[in-house]
Image 1 (cartoon, one colour):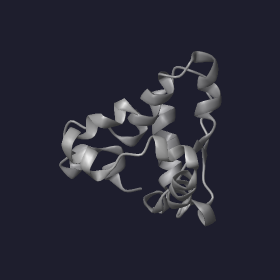
Image 2 (cartoon, one colour):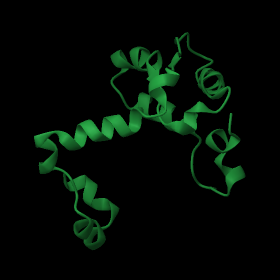
Image 3 (cartoon, helix red, strand yellow):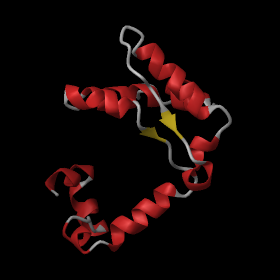
Length: 120
């Protein structure tokens, strides 16, 4: 697995968290009754997740973070869909009529910056 996803400091990304920490922190913010389901349904998407051993290493790192619990951690991968899943999902989202109410135009982003996402 590409080390930059697990240890971003090696990529000059000091101050950022590794992927396993980002996933763990996100799930911890969910209601406690949903956390076990979330940990057992992690779905990989995007071409960067196709590195050899990526899913196994991610599962290993998540298990280390949760070693004091008996949580079942399962990272799902489907190599046929994995590479294009992000694009397909974005395409579906953009085609929804309701999406037009929340999308951000470049001009709006340029004027307000990244914080504009919190207004939609």
